[in-house]
Each structure stands twice: as C-alpha cells, then as structure tokens.
Amino acid sequence: IKQKKRHMGDTNHFCPVSLKENFVLYPGLQEYAAKYKEKIYYFSTSKYRDKFLKNPEEYVAHKEPLQAPPLRVCLLGIHGAGKSTCARQIADKLGIFHIQFEEYLQELLLPKTKKKVGPSFDEDGEDDNKIPEELEDFSQTVTKTEEEEESKPEVILTDEEEAIKANLMDNMELPPEVLDKIVPDWWKQEPFRSTGFILDGFPRTFDEASYLSEKGLCPDVAVYIQVEEDDVLDRILPLRLKKWKDKQRKKKEHKKKLKELKAKQRV
Image (cartoon, rainbow, N blue to C red):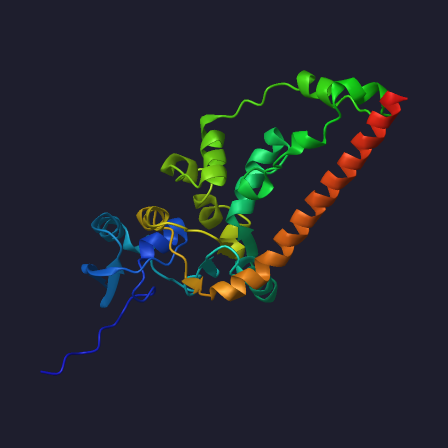
C-alpha cells in the first residue's frame, strides 16, 4: 500500500519547543511525535511534546516563517592541527564569532594570575636568572624583584577557578557546574545567540560531548581536522625551537653578567 507523504510541521524534523525556548535546532524523534492541524511535529523529549500540546499556537508559525538560529560550529582536532587558523578564516568569511576554548579559560584566570598558566607557559628555571645576594651590590641593574614578590598578596582562587587551572595545567576534566557558567551562554546569550559562532577546541572528551547533548546545546556541524604527525611537527617545532634558542641566549647572557660581577667583587 502506497503511504501518503507526511506533511511535516513548520520546523520539519526539528523540535519546535527547543527552537522557541532555547533557539536550538534539536532533532526530534518519531516516538515523540504529535499531530496538529494535519501536520506532524517531532519533539526531542516527551516533556516538550506535552508542553506543545497544551498550547500549540505558541510554537507554530503564523504570518511569517519561524526564524532559524545562526550557524554554530564545533571545530575539533589534536594540538597543532591548525584549528585556530582555520577557525579565524571561517569566522571572518561567515561573519560569526571565533571562540578559542582554551584561550577563553585563560582569560577567566588572568585577572588574578596575571599570566597564562599551563605547561606551554611555565617559565622553567626562571630563578636561574636571579643575581646572588653577595653580588647584588656590584650590579647596577638590580631590581627589587624579591621585595615586590614578598609584598604581593597571595592569589586566592575560587573552587571554579581552581578547576579551570587544573584543567589547563594537568588536563583535568571540568565539572558540569563549571561548564554551566561558561558554555550555555554561547547558545543563549547575546551577541552569540543572534550571530553564531565557531567553537574551537570544544568538546574535547566524550563527557564534554555528552554534556552538550544533555543540555540540548546542539551545534549545526562538528568538524574534525585530521592531520599527519609530520604536519604537526612542521607547524609546532619551529616555534618551540625559537623559544628554546631564546632561553639559551638569555642563560648565556646571564652567565656572562655573573662573570663580570664576580670580577668586580674580586677587585
């Protein structure tokens, strides 16, 4: 028997309640379907289906078609794959926001830490360039670094900031209560809500992807950039090598300065 073509509702197979209340295109399920004015609507949950049936006119189009939300993209890939470079170009071309997730976390801590945290920003051996106390009198460029450090108030981080720091330092999982204060705003608050965005580097784990699903925060597309190891090395190694050379040059200059100060001390 030839079945009649189904007449889908104004939102096609997307949930009209999710669109109205969360401004998200959330695919509905056939098991949560309802019929209204000879049209079939799919819903993401039974709760949203019941909500629709109580007051359908609130969720259907009237004189004008329903407005679809702007483009929301999740861009994924390993470190050094070129996510940020691609994301900036796409954001400029489409006129949407570029959100670099790890950089955003850094900005949340900067007001207190005054510097970026994480393995890439650790100044290994920064104490090596200090002038020994016995030679300070012979140095004309002595600063009050130690006194300033002693007078600095101790940085006290909140539990949420400690969780963010642990994530940046040791790649510890961010708890849902921290994500709740960061991620939903990109879907629900202006100016992101009406403009759209490309989210660079999130979600990074299965739990973070599950979090988006549970909260009904659906991207329109998720792109994973897959690259060869050699390509990553070509991108990252020159910068790391330059950083290492600069560090070695500073060490050499420091040794030379210490040698000159010791000579002054002997005189």
